[in-house]
Length: 145
Image (cartoon, rainbow, N blue to C red):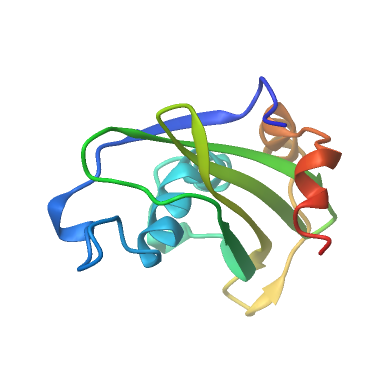
C-alpha cells in the first residue's frame, strides 16, 4: 500500500498533543501530515521563504484508523498520486509501531501570488515531484467510500 519512494518524516509526539482521552488529538494528524510535505514544498521553494511561496492547499481529507499515543515515535509517509498542469495530489499515512494510524490525502495548486491565480508547474519542479509519484490504487480505494 505504501510505495518505496514515499518520503519519510519522523516525529516524536509531545505531551501538548495528547488530549483528555489519553491519545494524540485528531487535529494533530493534519499538522503532522503538513510536516511530511516539507520536501514537496521545497520542490517549489527550496529555501521555504514565504516571500516566494508558491502553493495553496485546496482540499484535505483524513481517515482515522487507530489511536496514536505519546510513548513512541511516529513516521509520516508522503507520496504524490497525481501531478496535473497546475495542481498536484498527495497521499499520506501516519504510522506508529508498524501500524497505519491515520491516512490522508490532499490537493494543492501551484499559485502565482502576484496575480493570485493558478500557474503551470515548472518542468524542473515537476521533475522533483515525480521522484515521489506512485500509483497506489489500494490506498486510493480507502477514499472512494
